[in-house]
Length: 144
Image 1: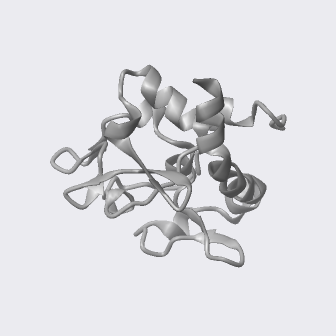
Image 2: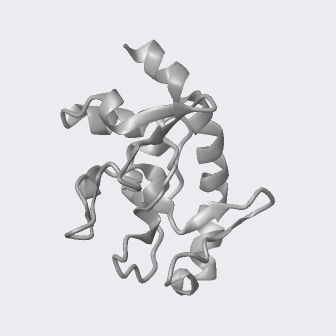
């Protein structure tokens, strides 16, 4: 499946990394996950206000942290409260950009279960994601 420019973030489930997640929640602790305009639109359509779940840092919208974890993470249940509409960046985890290349985040206990083919499939989209999060603020402003 090839994702067309302009509509690529409309099917966030396509960007989910196939690996063996054990729902440990490490990825939700201390997160500064960047948000696309499309993420913000999905979440606000569910009734959340932008200021409840996001903050701007360095010109980019990011998920807020509450008590050291993502605002949507329930540490008792070890579940995301908005799992079905979670941001694209969360779906692409444990893939990260280390400043030189896309790799797996080794703080994830099951980072080594991400097949090489998954990394290769998603590399161009991780890089595009990093570009597009910088445009979220402008896109949100234009759409309101």
